[in-house]
Image (cartoon, rainbow over all chains, first blue to last red; front, side, top):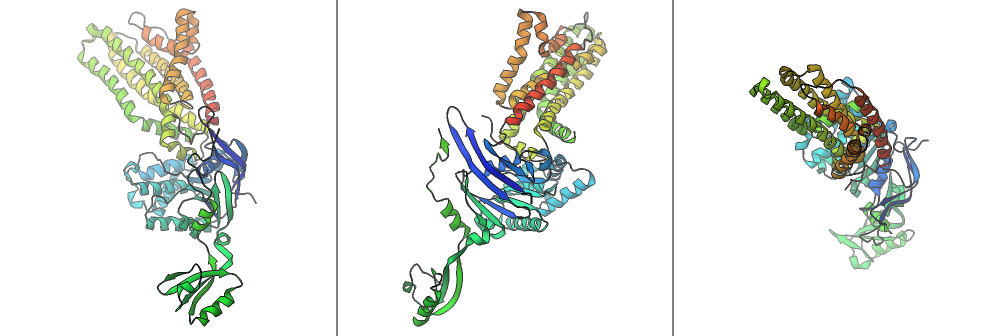
Length: 306
Length: 236
């Protein structure tokens, strides 16, 4: 099956004045399958935006290559099937509906279907009542929603979103999340770069964490979060001091034990007069994985090579 | 063709205030035409007409030289080039936009000129030929500036454009007159500047055609350079 997005051994070096260079991506390889929501995570300066800009054809790799929907990066015809929302979205100052129509027309759309679709996407992002207002007078959140609308106007097969919800209020975030899930249900692929880990955890099928221009974690979200070698036990009526690394909240003591030792631990709880509340495989948060994957000390001039 | 047209119209829309300011000069000529005693002040009117004509060439350099820079700096170029628009189409749209912006000005100037100068005895057809010269000069100057704006900031792009357009003119003055036609912006402007009531000039189309051909060459060169440029990184 043709990958929605594929990077093969891509390196990108930004050259500055003199001998100063910045290696943004280093032998970066990644494959995004059609029909999935793919979370793209990494600390600031890790190379996320560079990878996205390479995919969109805004810049060329120093080495390696990549494909988007089966064609090499930078193919204008392929971009007609792609929706893109940049981080810190910047749009022309004109009425929202006209602006969305403008971007739709650039994607090869036209006629009454474009007008209809423009109204539809503005409604989807909750801006139908603002469609006649100039985008220049919008708040940052509204601007971001307009950006989402322009990315969706051509009904893309592949959506590439760079921090799509960073300026949105919680309600709007929920709306965008539902929009993405709805798009996936329609068979579309979503490549989502975000710092909102809880959001990524909720909706992404697979996640990649990059650091210093390389993929340091990659896998199915459920697999990454699942920690098979430890069991989390919650119990009542026991002292928190009875078990190592335990925490207590509202009288419920929670701790984890290695898998296989849960039976002995449960008996110990009962012997102490405790009552078991729950026994579950330990599930880590995406934040734990992110911190673990990117915890190598990073200096301010990270990536600088002479 | 549709994306090119959309980008061109968008460019003109974004430059509406500079175009408006430019058109105020045409309005000045019209006011002078209304206020002046045309038979008596006709030389003054012609002088103002020539002066106002030259501004548009300078503005075309300004339009072309700042077009890509401002789009990259504001990052609005990303949303445009994320659509089904190739970089060549984007450049073509900007060239067409510069041409339309300058064409609007030249059309307004042509109308005002043919009324004021026509009444003073200047052949009306020649006024429109002079406008054609100006549009061709603007197209070439704007394209050269646009080429430099693919990798330089507007200040350096304008300087480099002035150099490229000025050197043949200088060579035409010092070495041999035909050197001025190497990049015929100066030649075209000179046709406007040399026109007078006694010798309004004649319609010589060669410099216009040459300018159009060279515009295509510079456009192709711009496309080659722009294709290699990382547009997500702002030029500083």
